[in-house]
Every structure is written in C-alpha cells, then in structure tokens.
Length: 234
Image 1 (cartoon, rainbow, N blue to C red):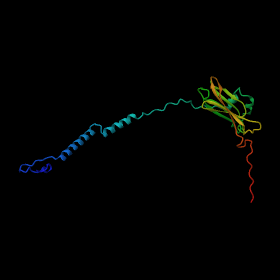
Image 2 (tube, one colour):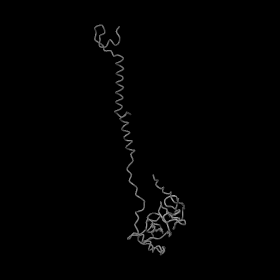
Image 3 (tube, rainbow, N blue to C red):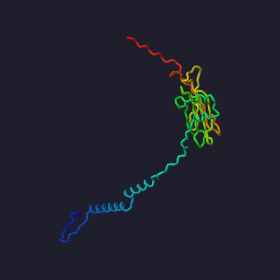
Image 4 (cartoon, rainbow, N blue to C red):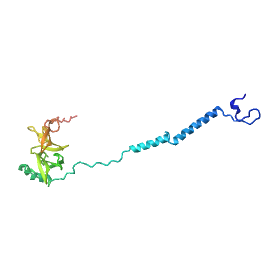
C-alpha cells in the first residue's frame, strides 16, 4: 500500500481517473491563510487594530488641546503722573523755612532731590515720596510723603532730620536713619535705624523697627589698617 502523500496526482493503480488527495500539511496551510485573511479584514473595517487605535489617539490629543486664552486685563495702576517735587516742597506749609531756604540747585537747575512713586495709602493715584539731600555728600536732610487730595497733594508724612532717607518697599514706607556716635565722620556712621511704616486709616503707623551696628574694621571706619611694610633692601 502506498502512503497518503504518494497518491497526489497519481492513479489508483487500476487504470481509472486520477484522484487529488489533500495532505495534512496542505490542510494546515489553508487554515492559516484563512485566519490571516480574517485578521486583515478586521483591521481594515473598524476592528480594534492599530489603524483604528491610531485615529482614536489623534482625536483624543486634538480634543485635549487647550483653547487659546486671551490675556486678562491688567488691574494695576496707571503710570504715575509726574509732579514737580520742588513746587510741592516750597508750597508745603508744614515744612519749615530753614529747609526751604537750603533747597537750592546744586548745578544749574539740578536740585538734590530724589522722587519715588508708588501705592502707599491705597488711593486711586500713586503716592509721592520726596527725599531732600545735601549737595556735597548727598546726606539726607528730610523725607516727605504726599497723597493726592482733590486737585493737589497733601503732606501725610514727614521727617526733618539729618541722615534720613525713605523708600517704598511692596506697599510699605521704609525710613532709614543713620546713627552717629561722637567723632564719627559723616561718611561713616556707627549704625542705622530702619523703621517700617504702614498706612492705617488716615495716617502712617510704625509696623517694624530694626537697628544695625556697622563694623568699624572695614573701609575708613575709624580703625587704622595694617602698616605698609617697608621695602626690604638687598
């Protein structure tokens, strides 16, 4: 008897018509091809294949993209309208005649005055801080704060004293006053008082106080430095 594989395209030994007999390997190959065809059909007609999954990811990314956001309008104050600090000082009835007499230009029409603008009193317009100094060594002799009042400005804070200077720090008024001991040169005070004021109701009240003592071992603070060594001869 011949094996199953030997009867393919052969006769049956009796002279009759040839019969085609499929082998086990042929049956397996046909089954695999059918399964691959089914899988490819599912991928191309809306199954869960990679093509559909890719499209779904694209849609998700598109829907997750944030819409353009328009910038919010600024709620800050408008730029400060510049004022004439010299006119403010000279027209201020609270300032004594001595400071007004000393308020003279250093060179041409340049006065020894620093002016700062900022929100100190919570008004609708920026407040004005004016520091008056000496021409020679730029030592402060007075600091003044003006708040808008109708068509003009009102003096709401002032200190007339030697070596005083005021700044605006995040809504606070910070006044620094140099402290001199006996014999201190003007350029080298012994320390400083730093006083922070905050607007409360209709006036400034003291919020904080810090005192700093300066080292006298640096610069020309009063201590003699090391003697300069004499050049050695050979």
